[in-house]
Length: 320
Image (cartoon, rainbow, N blue to C red):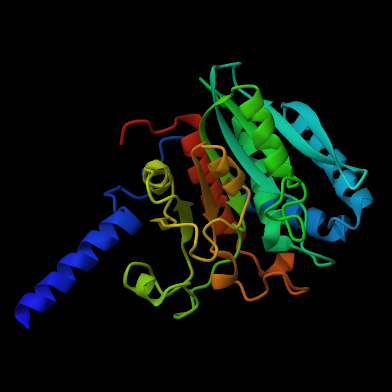
């Protein structure tokens, strides 16, 4: 019996190391003196979730109005801005691409989708991610970058287009491959605003994961493929830049939720990519509903997420 317990304990330890990739990091030791603004993030979320509804595939006029708004904001924030237009069922849709930094051979791509799954506010899903892009733009404008950073606002991520070639991020990823782009990493910001200090507020797709992660939903998660070390590297940089707990998971795509965002289109083409998320419906019970509103989000913690992503964008971690 003791031998069996030792074997089980050893197996769980190995599984923890493989899936959770633990690291030792000094929390809060910020390497950049940047302060994302929670009030600005809230203003963006409120403007997007309330001012452009509904913003799904059946309302292209609202999606394109939002694309124009995002382009104008990025231009105001000093970006080199372009549209990537494409057609679905003979209707034109737009990705918005904002560039910062030098024309380097290698680039970092940070993306977030701005559409919703039907007629709903979509504050967490995914006005939060788009607000994060805009706040990153303000910070990157002031940074001395050594590599190009692309901020990409994608359209048509949600059903019924999810998983098809008509996703905005699929169009973007194919164009980058066609141009033989060298991508250091693609980071998908997918629902980064909902947090809870209530015990038991964090759900899991597999009960085994309860052994490795908190049961309280007050952390941010980085999702990566099984055979990759990108999440661990990003996690180290984010944990060093903020007091918000940052966890990572390296998991197969068959686990529900692992490939549920724009990063999947970069995986399909062999590019390194991760998703930064509050874990979506495993925590936020307003997912894909009319209750996904701006007042439910925690903008202080959202600002900490952006501080961590900015720390990586300004000085990516290549070695650790």
